[in-house]
Image (cartoon, rainbow, N blue to C red):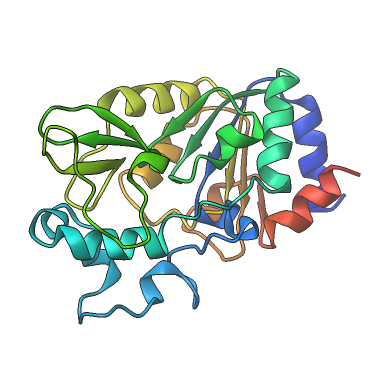
Length: 242
């Protein structure tokens, strides 16, 4: 039995699956990942500042207009649609097999595909708040092609509800994600190299029977996995859907 056949059997026999997803899950929706040759961290910027620094809290506070120019042009994909993998995991949740999705992604594609229980570790581009009065704004409310700084009706600056470097994760989201992982019988880690902390460390809370890793490249957790498949997620899902 090869790994794809084993994976199909594991999913068929599992009752409490948690999906832990990263940027590699959304590349087939046209959203670049972070570390590949075409990824976000290898994008050229107008100023001599690496992308990792641009998406930091301090840079946002000190260079808000340039942050938004980078954010709107490189991190917001208004036309992105859920791909086969997003839809597959949403279908498993509808069938009662998936307890929750824990995601590092901010693109809202899991929810668009139909997943209901989603813990967004790094926030979402869909939510935005005034830093002064905390009024909520949708992505459509603030998006502009001129890359102007979005301002609230009160005059305050609007900030995306995404976790920037130097910022901590939301405690309630952490608790929910860890609780789901601890109660899972199968953890499917998909589209992440597991190098971003603290999110990557959540895998250590898994106590179930089947740790599955689906990623193009090797990860530091491969040796702990029952199944580790290094391939495009699309190919794996197409096999599972047969």
